[in-house]
Image 1 (cartoon, rainbow, N blue to C red):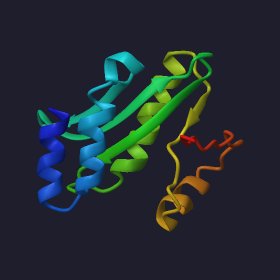
Image 2: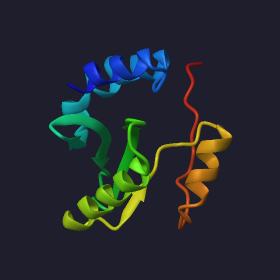
Image 3: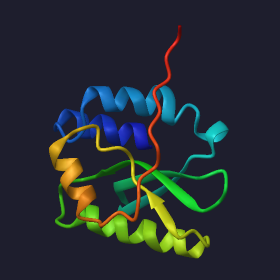
Amino acid sequence: MLINKCEQWRKTKEIDRNELRVLENTTLSLAEDLGIRSLCLFIGGKLHGFQLYQLSHDGRYFILNHLKVSHAFRFMIPYMELEIGKKAEECGVYYLNFEMDLDVPGLRTSKSELKPSGYFKKFSISFL
């Protein structure tokens, strides 16, 4: 269902081909092995948004990635942020680790506006 919705969004430029490829080939295909869960937003029986997330190994964080919403309604992203916060609280999780900003100015700005309490260390992995 998520892939089908993303395919629809790709046609309207609401998601790009590269992100769709990552969703299909890694995130969703490995979801069970990685413990990735989804929080979906349905309006009138139709999927209008989703947030993929997983619980950190120590159970203190939801690691959030691939927040996608329809542009059919205003304030969808803040609404989904609120809902994932409620879900975290229900699960006894007090920290949300939003996905990296990929050096995209708009993402960096929106994530900074959430007033982060800290940052995870970043690592680069390469083959020698």
